[in-house]
Image (cartoon, rainbow, N blue to C red; front, side):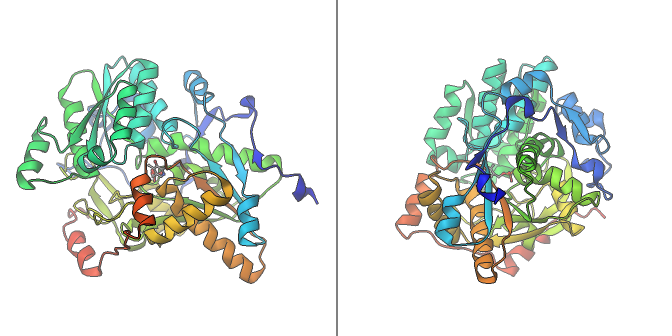
Length: 457
Ligand SMILES: *Cc1c(COP(=O)(O)O)cnc(C)c1O
């Protein structure tokens, strides 16, 4: 059987790496809705966006037409330090599960930042540098994005100011120190350095912050400091574009062995890794050339796709950012404090939101103890210590493989293993000590936040 010839790890050669990113918007009939100016409720123009983001990234954000966008040589050279990333056949997991399903995972944790976020960080830092900027500002929750951006900025000699959600700043001192190794300044958010930070601190004394707050602070600092722009690690169209490298490599590796996946699974926080992983497959699906089952996996405690509303909403708590049309739980929504599994953002990529709305993909939500059970099962047979975020995808892949065991289906499943969990040991500790609970917001709670969505249409 040709099957036996498939190695544990399918690597691409350096010269087989993609030379252009793929922009799935070009193949969408219903384009993602435009970002709106929160004041005028009119679509954001390139000029308006240029006050916050770098010029080239604004062009990418607004580009719904060009299917391929060349990856500049400098970025390709940087990618070569840690890419192509392996596509692994999970033979050991299959054996353990005794499933007829064939499971593959694309592993993005092989770099110091420990996740796929470096793929977009280097692109965003590169365009900032090219524009002659001094530096960039950003927010970080758990710290992976901040770490990735710090690495990219230090490589290119750019200043990097990171606003880190206060609870993570305090609970994840090691992530903070990695960022400082790469020369970034890291400020706990909400801080007393910005107008919005002071306001939030005054209104919510003792608050431990949220991603939405940290975004507001980082945007304010970028807008007020000449030579600075703001960068974001997920949600935006441009970020999904950069992350298409994941899917393009995956497809090239599968094509080498004539493997056609039946199901593609990814965890979804803001949607960037999933959007990147599925991009070329979704392109085929949109063009009617092939069909795939595409599944987003989100935490039951932050269920934007499965229980959110498809509507315009603020991307941040301070309401300074443009409005995006997306599946959202409301910009005030903050997942329960005992939620340790990441993927805490209230909204979702507008591209994925549109595709989900149009029926091109589905979504499931999973409870966090089940996620950590899957993480350990995976770690014990495949060796890699997965990030809690990534483990949402593992959970769904294992569940599907177990279903195949019942039915005897020899399904080919590909999932995105977005990163490693070395900095998430407090969460693993809670799990081991039986202190992890599964909080699922009630319909009443969600309705309360949804009622506060801005009235746009
Ligand atoms: C940030 C992150 C995610 C979630 O972000 P997306 O934009 O939804 O991809 C998932 N896994 C890891 C390891 C991350 O760092």
